[in-house]
Each structure stands twice: as C-alpha cells, then as structure tokens.
Image (cartoon, rainbow, N blue to C red; front, side, top):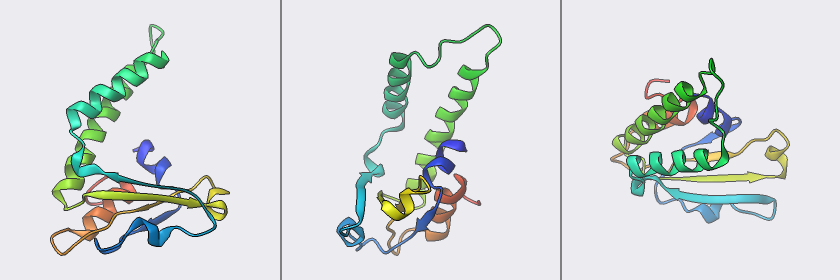
Length: 133
C-alpha cells in the first residue's frame, strides 16, 4: 500500500478520543489538519478521486501500460481501508507536522480511539494498511 506508506513515513500515535488536535499544535507546527473519516462515503470518494485523476490526465496510457489496473487496485484498497478503519472504531484522524519531522518529508498521523475501538487494529491500519499489519 504505497499511498498509505507514503503518508505514514515517520510517526504513528494512538491517543484517547478525548484528545483534541490543538494539544498537538505548538509554535513549531507547520501543518495541522483533522479529518472525520466516519463521514466519508466510499463510493463518493471513489467518484471524486476518479474525477480529479481524469482532470489531470494522469491515466492517459500507452498500449502496454498497466497504470489503469494499478489505479483501480488502489481505489479498491482505499475503500477497504476506510471500511476497516470505521469497523475498528476509527472515526477521525489528525495530521500534524513540524519543521523537524518535515525534514524527512514526514507527517504524524494520530487516530484517537475510545473504549469501543480496537486500538491495535487502528495502529495496524495506519502502519501497513492492513488489519493485521
């Protein structure tokens, strides 16, 4: 899962759901974001990603190119990952980086959890993209 690995190069944290994005922001923060993944409808996400990629012309292929097949596999992985994340109790993620970890093109992905969540599975999903990774 290259797209997950690229996003999770350096740091993985799992914290209680009572956590707030602001507790990870300080004067060294370069970027911070919050995404509520429980509100993403996989079919709509797929449609949006396909439209964006089509608009860029990124899938204009040569006769022997397997880019379309690999792209379709990535879409299926994205949809599976979203389903596994929410099924394991994941709702939102925080993304934070600062000057120090940005040197390595890294970003911290934080997945808050509560007593109904499975933190081990959530950590596996963030680390490898798989529930048992």
